[in-house]
Structure formats: C-alpha cells, structure tokens
Image (cartoon, rainbow, N blue to C red; front, side):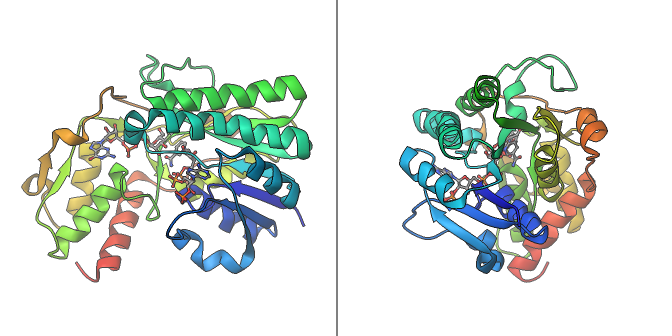
Length: 320
Ligand code: NAP
Ligand code: G4F
C-alpha cells in the first residue's frame, strides 16, 4: 500500500486529494496545525481513513517528525497562507509559511525521506502581470503580492532541491480552482454564499471589489488528479494546470444570480475595502503540456462550476 503525506489536508485541495488517494488505496497521513477550535469539517467524512499528525510549516522539528513517522512515498505540500488579500496585512507570516515553509519541508524530505516524491503547490499568481496572454511553463513571473512573491520563492526552492540533491520534486502551477469547499473569503465562494443568502431571504446585498478582474476558474476535484499524476512520471517537472478560458468576476456574479432567477445589478454594491493595492487583471493558462504528458484535462465547465457552488450553498441555507 503506497503512503502519502499531505500538508494542508484540512484545506479545500487537501480534502479532495485525501479522498482521491484513499480511493486509490493509499495510506494517507495529514499534517494538521494546532488551533483553538479544531477545523476538520472538510475531512470529517474521511477521518477514520486518515492518520492526522500535529505539525506546522513554521516548525522544523514537527515536519521532521511527521516525515519520519509517515515514511511517505509521496508528499503533497498544499499548506500555505493562501489568501492573497491577507498577504498585504501579514506579509512576514506569509513569507514564513508560504515561502520558507517549503524549504523546511524540503529539508525534512532531504534528511529523512530522500526517495519520497514531492509536489509543491505553486500558483498562477506568480505570473502576475507577465505580458503573455496565455501563460505556460516558460512564461516569466511578475508577482504582484507578498503571497505571489512567497510562492515564487517556494517554486524555485523546489527546483533547486531537485537540481542540488536529485530529489523527485515538482511544481504544479495551478490556476484558480474552486468548489463548494472553497474558503468563504475567496471571491467565488463569497458570491455563491451571498447569492444563496439573498435567495433565501437572509441578506439583501453583496459587497464586492473589482468586477473587471478575470480568472481562469476550474473545479478543485479535477485539479487534484493532476497533482497525483505529476508524481507518477519518470521525471519530475513543472506543469501548468488550467482550463484555458478566463471569465470576469462580473461574469461569475451574473451567472450565479441568474441561476436563482435574480438580476445581480439589483444586489451587488462595489466596496473599496475589497480592492487590492496591486491587482492581477487577467490570468489564463495553457495546460497543453499536462494534457500531452499526463493525459490530464479539466472536466467541469465554468457554468457547471458556478451552478454546483450556488446549489450547494442554497441547499446549506435550506431553500431558494
Ligand atoms: P486553503 O483551503 O486555504 O488551505 C490551506 C491549508 O494550509 C489549510 O489546511 C491550512 O490549515 C493549512 N495551513 C495554513 N497555515 C499553515 C501552517 N503554518 N502550517 C501548516 N498548515 C497550514 O488552500 P487551497 O485552496 O486548498 O490551496 C492549496 C494550496 O494550493 C495552497 O498552497 C495554495 O496557496 C495553492 N494554490 C491554490 C489555488 C486555488 O485556486 N485553490 C491555486 C494555486 C495554488 P487550517 O485549516 O488549519 O487553516
Ligand atoms: O478569489 P480570490 O481571492 O483569488 P486570487 O486572489 O485569484 O487567489 C486564488 O487563486 C490563486 C491562483 O491564481 C491562488 F494561488 C491563491 O491561493 C487563491 O486560491 O480573488 C480573485 C479576484 C481578485 O482579482 C480579486 O481582486 O477577485 C477579485 N475580487 C473582487 N471582489 C475579490 C472581491 N476577491 C475577494 N476575495 N473578495 C472580493 O470581494
């Protein structure tokens, strides 16, 4: 039975990846940090199939022990301070967790499990305002937030450990991927939750920031399959994972409101508090390398994703 260690198992991607690996017959270990209130809602249904280990990406000794305990064949480093907006308010913490945290887990791998295969959750945010319209594995980076800067550091640290120590380390450069399990602070979940509240009579407005921004939105359940595939290859490499199509926040909003028979313009208010000091206006990825080498393609359309998220939130609040 292969063994995997997932950092960030309590997050959106960690929960989908854990489900996938359990289904494939893996013994799955998950790193969980100490919180005053436990946060295992996303993995609640799976918890009997997992081994949870206490640890934190800022604590080297806990990572060493986790790697020594799990003796993993595969390590997926999904943990991060992952909310871009927060990275301007907590830049030092973001650099420590999202950037240096990658080096800490790589050090644990190098010393205690050098044959393990390692996946780093890199991000399309690293491309920032890089001018190419469709970003691929050779597109230069121009990060626009402390989060993106930290991800660039983690990305190159992963490549450097591969080149320095011949570890099997690779970066998945994932574009935005969403689901009903997305954190409420991210724009898609904020919209689907807001639409459901309005449809159920619990709210009468939704406050958003920049509606012109465009993102390449896919479904998280599709993207974790690509993460697994990257660790099953002969050689570790970088892969862009994306749908190839971008939509604006306005498009997402309009479709979400229309799904419950409402006109978004009657409810949405622009609120300066949700504008960012530096924005990434448009992100769109070219996943043709992943398609050719991994046989990976997204299976969930933008429309199906929006509907899935709104339906889940309407069901959560009771009725539309
Ligand atoms: P998420 O839902 O925010 O999950 C982040 C996870 O990291 C949570 O399990 C969180 O634990 C954990 N974490 C945070 N700080 C930690 C620390 N100091 N030590 C240990 N664990 C810590 O993020 P996601 O959407 O699943 O994304 C997974 C990864 O992919 C992240 O690295 C993200 O930056 C990257 N990424 C995401 C996307 C996307 O569109 N979703 C795209 C590209 C890259 P708690 O539950 O305790 O908070
Ligand atoms: O949903 P977001 O907060 O995601 P963002 O910043 O694109 O980052 C996500 O995707 C990255 C991959 O590209 C990941 F690496 C990262 O971890 C995270 O998962 O914001 C999307 C866009 C932004 O341009 C933002 O300015 O939506 C715009 N937006 C407009 N109004 C808003 C809002 N974003 C949020 N969160 N809240 C708003 O009210």
